[in-house]
Length: 125
Image (cartoon, rainbow, N blue to C red; front, side, top):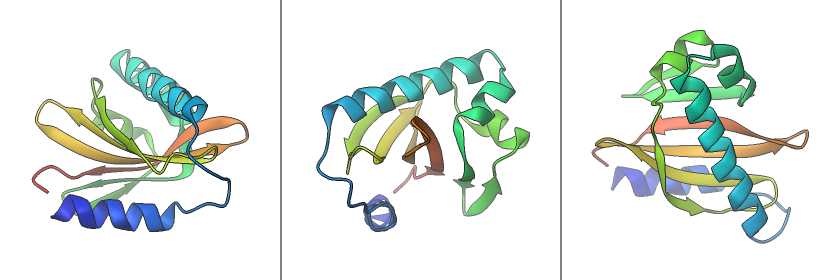
């Protein structure tokens, strides 16, 4: 139930007038997730931070963490996409998984690049 509430809230926050879902955007977001995983796996903190939106937040067990070096170590390095939703040319909502943990991610396109804006643990939802 909680994941449905989170998805609804994320969809409401990520509404855009940029148009319909685009498959090109889906591929770009997939590439961005892969690049984030790769940089995190190799402990490239600056590279991961560069892939995070300036307003990025990580939410874990109700606690909110801002964009800084601490959150880089909190992010899984092997997440894979379960579902992509509300994909447009400027935003996407992604449900990902790493081990038994599930995450809701909001990706936004800023200055021609996809940036992770919100990352929330929704396991047990």
